[in-house]
Image (cartoon, rainbow, N blue to C red; front, side):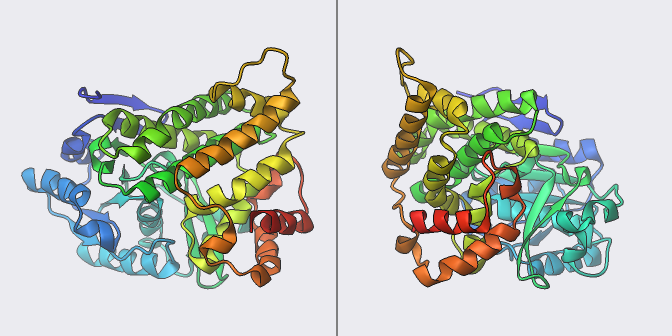
Length: 388
C-alpha cells in the first residue's frame, strides 16, 4: 500500500507515500534552500522519524542546523530561541518535523528571523496579517502525527507571553512550499496520541463542514476527510503498523486543514484555553468538548450531522435528519470511547472552579464566532460544565 510516491498540489506541493522522506533533498533543491534549520521537539529528536529525516539530509551532504526545544503547546520563547539560532547560522529555510507544535514554531521562526518585537504584533485578530510583508524563507513540513494539518495550512498557533493566551498568526506567506507525508514516519506514534491527533483532524473536518460560510469546495473536502477518519482512525489506533490506515489518516489531517480555511467553531474556542492553562493536548481537548458542542448544535446542524451518521452506517429509511443527527452524536461518543479516550474534563486535571475563567478565555477566542449556532459566554460556560 502506498508504495508509489505521489505528488499533488492544493496549493502546497504534497509528496506522499512510503519512504517519501527520502525525497527531502530534492524538495530543498526545488525551492532553493541550501542551509535549512530543522525544528522539532525533544521527544522526537531521538526517535526513528527524526533519524529518517537526518539520514535523508546526510545522504546528500546537506548542511543543516537543529532546534529541538519545542514545547507540546508551543510558547513564544520557542520561537525566540529558534529564530536566534536561525539568524546566527545563516539559514535560508526551515523544516518542521513533528506534530502541529513543531510545524507551527517552524512557520513562526521564519517570521521572527526577519522582525523584531513580539509575536503578539502579528496576531490575526489585531491586524497582524497586514504587517506580514513577505516573502519569507521557504518552509517544508514533515508531519509525524495525523491531526493538525499544519503542513498545508496558512496559520501558526503560539502562546503569547504578552497576552498570556494562544494567538493565531495567519498569512498566505506561512503556507509551506512542500509537505512530505510519509506514513512510515507515523507508525511509532503511541495509541493515545494517534487517537488524540486523529480526533483533532475529525473536529477540523466537522466544524468546517458546519461552519456557516459559503465554500462548497471546502465542504466537499471536509466530507471526504470525515469519511477517512471514520474508516481509518480506529484501525490506526489499534495497529500502529497499519500503513493503509496511517496513510489515509495523514491525508485526512491535511484535508481537515484545507477545509478549515472556512473557519471552525465552538469546540476549538473551548479547546484552546484548556491547552494554554492546563496543558491538555489540543486533540484531546477537542475530543473532550466535541460531544457537548454537537448536542448544542444538533438542531441547526441536523443535515450535516445526518450525513455523518450515514458514514457510520446509519440507514436513511424513514429517519428524519433530526433523528440521524442525534444518532451521529451517539456514534461520535462511541468512537471516542473505543479510542480509549476517557471523557470528562474532571478526569484530565481540570478543576470545576476553573470553568468560569475558562469560559471568559474561550469567548475571547475567535473560533466560536463561526459556530453554526451563535453562542454567548454563558453558553460556553454551560458547554464546559457539560464536558466536565
